[in-house]
Length: 339
Image (cartoon, rainbow, N blue to C red; front, side):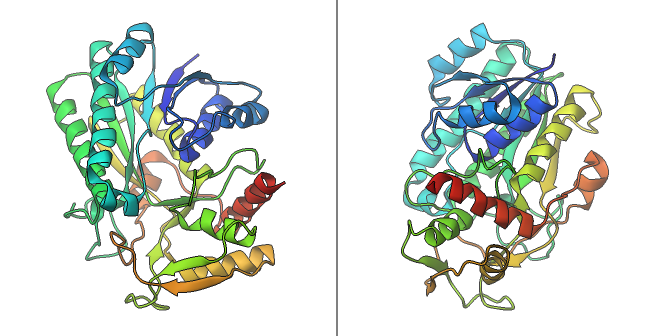
């Protein structure tokens, strides 16, 4: 049985990815410090798959604890590194916290891999590495421009660190998946996006507002140079995103990678505005969203969406679920939380 380590595996994307790997026959081990997730997520994974993954609760930015873990756990076919802080706005307010956590945890994981001959890494990267692109849609060859936020910069720096490490060794291989905007939840409504405190992402704020947990949704800016004035993103169903990790892992394990460090855009190839999200959510759920227009949020870019043709062709992966599917699944998950 192949074995995968998923860091940040009780988080939003991590938990959905754990389900996909278990269902594909992998043994899954999770590390998470539960700073932005809950231990009960493991129960959701077990209810879906029938298997409760092995779980380790510690902070990967702790050098000694990470080293101790890898001394006792060496036989991974692949590691998927999600564990990171991820809120653009918060990173502008607390840049050192973001650099300390996101960069140190990656280095500690790479040290553990290097010291124990673990060869394959899937890195959770982001379309933020492109900043505000001059040309849309964004291809993998689009220039990496100065980041709009410390969060985005940690992803740029992380990719550089991985690339440098790849060049220094003969057997280490990595794929960075540059996510666009994951939304939605597993069809079972047993796992989903579970922000601690006030959500930083649009969809949980939408669902919490409709559920009565938040008074009003703030739409940050309606004066962007877009058709309706609100920001445009490429919203991808989290289950489609999770399946990309499985395909990428198999590519590394089967040595089908074309170079030792590859990058792929993981999105739908379509851009939707915040107002389009609101209207589509209202259509698929029959619920009205109480929203107000607020000033632009520092660190946000105007519009970005993916050219996914390279990922589609090279990985043999493409999205299967629609925006309506994603929004309805997010609402079903919220209703489960509210029950």
